[in-house]
Image (cartoon, rainbow, N blue to C red):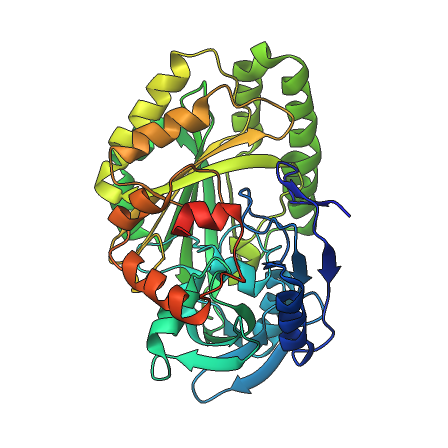
Length: 432
């Protein structure tokens, strides 16, 4: 069969696609692949834009390994099957009175896939999802099953929290949750220069800040989310407004605009002016995951880099100057977020507060060189690439950017000496 990722820019022809029905089947799958001399890659929702999951060997889906396996109410921790989709996990956590501390803006990924690639969300007093991981169960290359955490094989735990699928098959994830909370969302239009100038004040004043800049214009959509207590009188947005914004404007109408852009690239600047105006101001309060996560049906390709937050004005300014001076048409907005530092070895936020800049292009349009140009800009500022998004960096450059990169490679040599869990892309990232 032919496998394709969500964006359609990566395809592969695996020898077999297997979906184990239980955790107990996974070691046998790995051992049988070894007997056949096949490599094994695990795929979740396919939301990575890189060939991270591509293989000509065994492609392993954890679709049936889903759900919450254990709840520790005293510690507010849950143990979750690795294939559990975030969109299924979030409402179940809410029913338990719990929530993940932070989320990205897409919830289609499996929990194992989300942490493997460093899905991060936004908020300088918060970290990415992997920072909430307190334990992992993995099937190693020899078929053995290990449970690791900060006290049991802490090096494998640190390497595998954002592990790219290179250390073993993550079958279970233990997560440190927080009490369920609500967010007051405030979305307003703005001007790029004004938002950049006031960015430091914004990220300190609000819990979660995210803005979308529409290229070829000076317009942005600014999103500010604040955590509120139970006494807050705010209400969710009306159902009609949610359908209007999420279904019609952000997906169906936006999809139509992108199809028009693909047919007539020259009108993109005018289309972006329309897009920026259509998504107007709104304010509402709702459960955290309902505010964090949005529906994304219009397909695209994306490159995202983390840079030190102080470098954000220079990076955005250089990107804007390049776009304005080149014959390129970008109907998708550029997204900017920030997070606090964490201690996860291969996390983009390892011991560094970051701003994240993400460049998108509609999947049916050529990028016009913007991804290459963007990568050149962020390289001047120690940019760390999102592991699941487009970039060209290899092991030599990544070793300079990640202080514990060598330690992660040492763990990999120990648990997968024959490179059962690799492919050409991982060889480029981590070396042979």
